[in-house]
Length: 219
Image 1 (cartoon, helix red, strand yellow):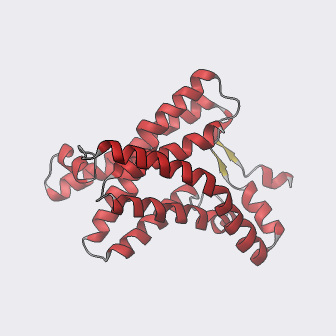
Image 2 (image 1 turned 90 degrees about the horizontal axis):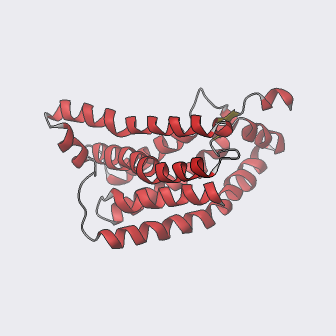
């Protein structure tokens, strides 16, 4: 198993490196907004608003709902892993396949962060990770695809890209993609349904996303 241990990408070994890399997620809203503003002859600010970064009504309800969904996702996530990894993939491809998949995963959990690093990570998950990923995968992809496609197809495309973003081809082995794609795809679907239910608002799905990540971080 030594050769496969070398495949693991442990981004959390240095918490400051992990913190720095989180800022790269800002590109998920900056680049699409720039492209959209050029194509539609909008201002950059107008493009951001079109992607969902604007004032919202019923803000308190959306915040409370987002927190509730995030907590629910946290308790639901272990069962989802068991279902896809152990019940489906392990039964289809065997134990060795799953072991290789886990060895090839990208590990983003910080290893022994100090108090300042932990607080910084929590804040960045709230203000960058959740909002940026949800603005791109929900606010941008679903809206743009829905111009030409039915909503259900737009949701599937968004969720597929969301899953591949978390198990990126060329960075992780095929075993890892196959094993964990369903897990991330399901969360992509759930976050998309929240986005649609709350009238295309990224607030509740961003908070749910951030809350879920923070619970994984501290518990």
